Amino acid sequence: MRSSRLLPIILCLAAAPLAAQLPPLGVPRGLVRIELFGSAATADRQWVNGQSTDLGGLTGPVFGSVQAPFLAEPEARIAALLGDPSYRTNLGASVGRAQARVTAGGLGLAVGLSNRLTLLVRVPIVESRTQANLAFAGTGAQDGTNLASPIVGTPAGQAAANGFFTAYDAALAALSGQITSGAYAGDPAKLALAQQTLADGTALRDGLRALVSDAATAVPFLPLASSGPGAQLAGRIAALQSTLATDLGVTGFTAAAPLPTAPAAGYEVPNYATAPDGPVGLGTFSPAKQLSLGDVEAGIALTLLDRWQESRGGLRLAAEVLGRFPTGRVARPNDPWAVATGDGQFDAEFRIALDVGGPRFGIRATGGYLRQFAGTVTERVAPPGTVFALPTLAAPLRVDPGNELGGAVTPFIRLAPRFALLGGAEIRHRGTDAASYASTPLPGVDASTVTLGTGGTRVSFVGGLTYRTAGTRTGDRRTLPFDAGWYYEKVLDGRGGRVVRWETVRFLVRLYAQLW
Image (cartoon, rainbow, N blue to C red; front, side, top):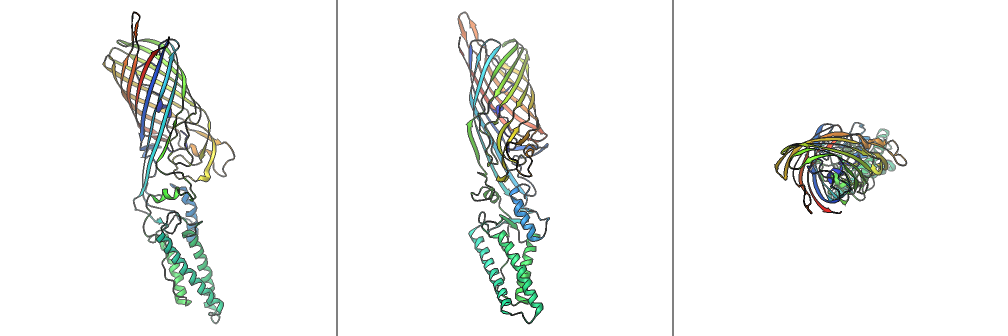
């Protein structure tokens, strides 16, 4: 999956059999192996630079324009009206939860050309689903929902704002009429005050209307009336009303500033981000779901050394060389939670497995290298994990995912002649991605933004239970092998970049048939 998506996952691991299985990688000469496999992986936590956090990265003491970049432009306009460049949107402490689930199932075929060389292909079907929610604790908030907003407001809030601005307009019109009629002509100081009040009041009204109720420019969130910025705005309006009524004889404008009185609700942020006529244009917030063909893989397995007997153990060494094709579906750029069903580029992988053991105990050691080639995909050019990236940041990118190197050590014990219990550890390291624009660059936006934190190392526990019959030959009669297994894997630790804490269950059934 692409580095700029929320949930980096190596889908080939969800589709392929676990490397620590006891059955051989190859197939005896003249046999075809039919492989049925499936997996279910779930996650709701991740490590970011070694720190454990929720999967969506939405939990924190402050929720503002850093977490939701679409708030930056409204934030700047509110700061300009306040005359305070340090103003920052703060919706308070946030509590976010996201859970991802990736299920895969499919069919594999392997043909033994000789006792050492096997051709194989695997075809997965992958479904990804992500569920997320966002809530605010109400603590520390200095901003709330603009109830007059045409997108996240309410009819009552819009009516209240309209009433406020109707009274405001009437007061300014009355003041302008007083000036025009010469009501202050005999008092130059009062005339100057009236003219200045009209200019200042008009500028304040226009700025407020643009932020509060204008259909094209209203912001989704405003300072709370009880906050420092809210009190500053309310104080300016109260001072204007006092000057009009006390010094200039214009009465009737007494309405309070249309500012929110309660912190925002968590659902209002996603509602704004996914509004069809809104500026953010996300397709959906939650749930996100994709079902499609995964990345098909094909290759060869080569048995380098085979001195293994099912009843006695021994020594066995085999290798696989695989090519993985971009037949899956990449993540949608307008879906912040999308988990791809394919990588979107060609991959080549080399794996090697060594089995050493006796009649009851043994160990499988595995290693592998994954070379991921560059591919072109449309991304919103923002750091990985940015849920609310703006649509104006979408651009075609040429992304070269980081290569992966890993290994596992898995001891096993035979519980019975055909059953084995295994458990061990795997470590896997992914290099940092590289990215460049595939067409015209976005002004001032570096394509490498999508690669921030994409490298990382994860350590996983792997375990399972396997069943195997090796097949026998008695005279002209031959019984064919049969393999089955149930496997469990959990990521225990992550270092460097973003590492998702996947918990995965897999099953595998292998049936054999005679070809020649």
